[in-house]
Length: 135
Image 1 (cartoon, rainbow, N blue to C red):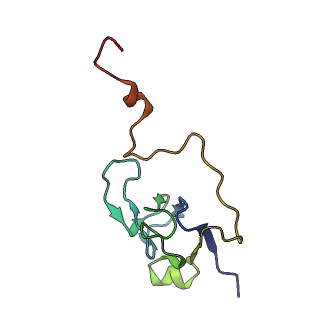
Image 2 (cartoon, rainbow, N blue to C red; image 1 turned 120 degrees about the vertical axis):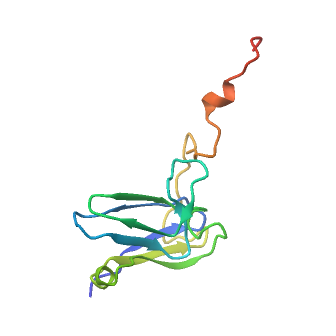
């Protein structure tokens, strides 16, 4: 029996899951239990989804809202899967293991410099613009 595919992160870590639909005429469904992500990750105020359809040659960029463990920061194992039963039964599933902060099974993430901004964050260019000619 093959090993279960497992993604691991500390609670609250930013998580991005990239899903690529292999060439197929059949629509499939990707989901991560207990987590949501913006339907359009670079659009301010985008709807949050927990399941997304994809077809052949399509890509899903799931930037998990609230990071690993979601906004409530819940430690545990979460199933990710293709919700089409035939695909799930064929092995299109795995676990997202959310570990407590400081757990030594994995190393902590290195700090991001400069810090990654979301669509809701003010850009540095916007922060310096002013209509005051004296500035």
